[in-house]
Each structure stands twice: as structure tokens, then as C-alpha cells.
Length: 170
Image 1 (spheres, one colour):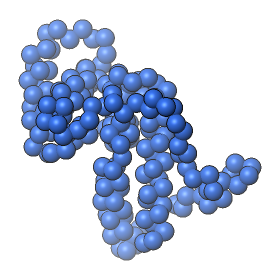
Image 2 (tube, one colour):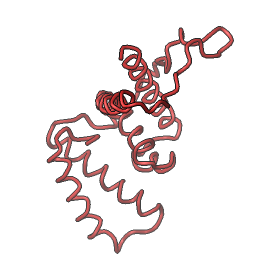
Image 3 (cartoon, helix red, strand yellow):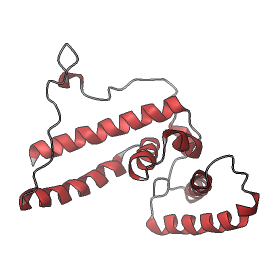
Image 4 (cartoon, one colour):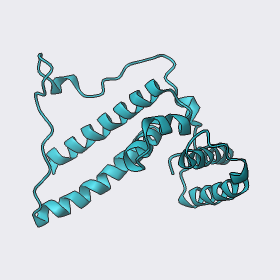
């Protein structure tokens, strides 16, 4: 779903991927883990399908050629000494109201992840949801370690900011 916008298309990509895995298993050279190899096939098929369906822009077109920096966290959140002026609040109370709010927050989190640029969404999903290592994400998406770290940091910062705004208003 990171590369294609329709669930049925994503399911077809997964089916195509499994067929490619079954066909390609005899030629698997073990230069990476099986998991990374399978995800690399999945990403390649999803990118190809997205371009063919014209529903998405290829991941590679989202490089930041100008090198423009965007602040990861709003600078007003910090004191001059670098400490938090307004630190994130703990979420640990389990009253029924809090449990309901947690469910609503999870739905909000999913919507905010969907709003991220595709490159940030892909890195965040692979690292924080799927649990891949940094090295595996770099191999799957064919990006540098530095680019992966920047994309992950920016994505996490945007999600954090959106959730904090949502929770302040709740």
C-alpha cells in the first residue's frame, strides 16, 4: 500500500511477488536475508505496478536535489540550552475514556502515516511497523544509510507533531 493506492492492486502485487519468489527461489544467492530478498522483489513489483497504473510517482523521484533542510521538530519546542521547552507527555493512564481515546489516536496515526510523502512513509513503515533494520531498509529501497536516517527522522517528527496537536485538542 506504500506504492499503490488501491488495496486490490496491492493484493495483486503480493500475489505476483509470491509467484516470483517461488520461481526465483532456486536462484536465491543468499547475499541478503531471505526476508530482505522477498521484500526487495515486493518493492520492485509494487513500483513497476504503480508506474504502469499511473497511480503513484516512483520512489526515486522524491530525492531532495536541492538539499533543502526542513526542521524535524519546531524550534520553538526547545529552550536556548537545547532542552525541551514543551516535552512530550506520557500516555499511560488506562481508564475507559483513555482506552477509547487510544483507539481514536491509532486511527489518527494511520491517517497521518498515509499523508506522509511516499519515501518517508516507506521508510517509517518498514522500520517502525514491519521491524526491519536500517540496513535491510536501505537494501529494500535502494537508498543510502544517510538518506534512510533523514527520511525516518522527518517522518517520525511529522507524525509526532500531528499526534501532539491532535492530543492537545482532544
